[in-house]
Image 1 (tube, one colour):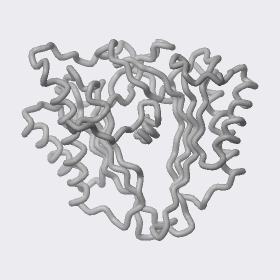
Image 2 (cartoon, one colour):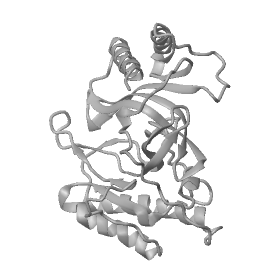
Image 3 (cartoon, helix red, strand yellow):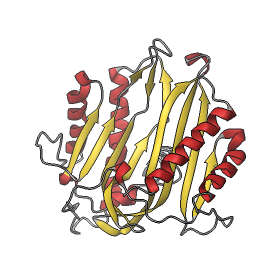
Length: 316
């Protein structure tokens, strides 16, 4: 899943697929609220991705939020026992010394991943079922106080969604996440199945139309058609995103470049098969700080991404 929503998402999210929707409704909940209904928090392991010296303080701060709300969370998972559900808090500024001295790239997020099933292929794997994220930004610095504030905002949002989704039926049995008999395939190992019809969308600024035509031609050589009827919701989507964001004075002469290809379709949450969400069942993406990309460079990136997707389609 990505932020656009990405995000992821998408890239937006969910992306937009299961897009990363940061927009909230009047009650203060997000578009992902329903996916937390009857979620067993005691089976969820909290992962914190942050500067090493701050990981434990941030984890304890997050756990205090759950404790004060009267909720039990599994915690850091010092045990080696694998967990089928993870809540990953990312507060990890990345230095950009070689490109933009004194600057960092920062994209805070909180993401719940658990087992899901792709009905089209029957594959069970780990995927995002709840996410809140911010668009990546180049900043001068990110202080410890800044990290604390982002943690408070993200964790409070998750707790709000969970409490709102579960307050109407507090006595109902919670559904725990089942462990599969075999390890769930990783994101890049998912089988794509026999795809013959794909709806194509392209986001690439003024070159979107031309690149879309090129993608359609590339797919056609592999026997994959792209319908003109965009209203058919049963067709899977292939979303190409080649987005450039000027950085201005933060990093003169460079852009924030989001480069990704996403196969988007409905998936089922394994613990509640009746719950379906839109998500990326295959993706390849990257965020880079680069000089502005020309049309020719975007075309080369598009060709490479689609070629990788087509190769994965034949891999089991």
